[in-house]
Structures are given as structure tokens and as C-alpha cells.
Length: 105
Image (cartoon, rainbow, N blue to C red; front, side):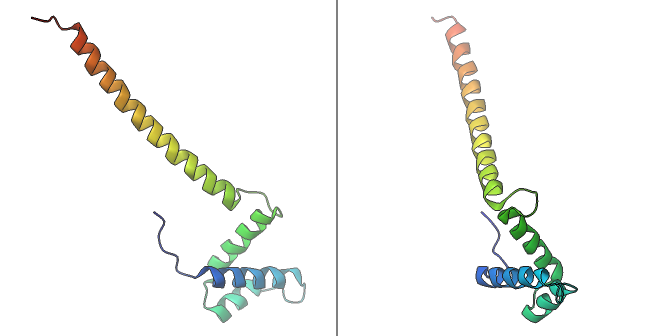
């Protein structure tokens, strides 16, 4: 289960949108993340990470999109479960094979 988020999704979306818009305008580009972060009470480094991820999700920057990361996490979880089930079946198979090899009275 994921940890609770410090910032609500609405604030995150609004801050990201404001930062992306400010970075597009050459007049407000310099120090935009710091300025917007201070206005909204968000650490500028956190805001920078949000903006980078938003650019990746939009295809403007290379990287793993949020949807791909979610899908990858689901597949890794499923893979762990299948490996665990396979290990249980192997040990059960070995146990019952040993039972069949024992001489009966």
C-alpha cells in the first residue's frame, strides 16, 4: 500500500500547471520553480520533480511515464506472487514424490 501523500492532488496539479506555464515564458522562466514553490508552500525541489514527471508524461522529455511505472509495478508484483506459488508447488511435488517412493506395509 502506498504512503499517504503530503500534498493533495489538486495542489499538485495546480502547482505543476503554474510552473510549466511560467517556464514557457522567457520573462518568468528564471527562478519560476522557487517563486511558485514559495507562494504555494511547496519545496522547490519537489515542484521541480513534479514538473519533470509532467514533461515525461506529456512526451516532451525522455523517461518512464507514470502509467508505465504503475504497470511495471503491477507486473513485478504479479511475478513475485507467481514465483512464490511456483516454489510452493515444487516443494509440494517433491514431498508427494518422496511419499510415493516409500515402501508400503
